[in-house]
Structure formats: C-alpha cells, structure tokens
Image (tube, rainbow, N blue to C red; front, side, top):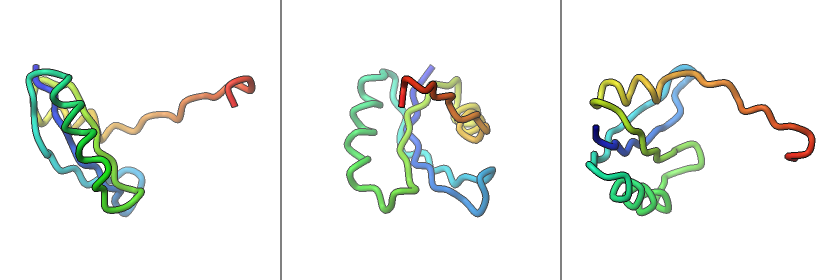
Length: 78
C-alpha cells in the first residue's frame, strides 16, 4: 500500500476540505521527506500537508475527509 502526500485547504465549512494529491510513495521515509520539503512553502496557516497510508487515492481522500473528535487534554497535559 502506498503513502500519499496531500495538501489540504479549509473550505467554506468544517465539513468541506479542498484536497490536492501532490505525490505518492512506496516508503514512508520518502513520503515524510517530501512533506517536510513542502511545509515551509505553504501559502497560509490554514493550509496543511499530510501523509496518509491507504490502499488507493480514493480511500486516502475518504480518510482525510473524516470528521475527527478533538483530542481530550487532561489538566496535567496543559
């Protein structure tokens, strides 16, 4: 299964995201290095570059579009 590198921009609402596939790699190390190269050149703070592991590009986009709960931060972790 390949590793995909995506650029993610926020859309009009929290449920909508603009995804752009930038590259795919067979090894995590190559994907991680490419993502690190791209992050300094981001247009604004609302744009992200992420690496995701999936069977294909469709599954990768579905995983990236999922709404996830915010992590719970305990008092001692602040």
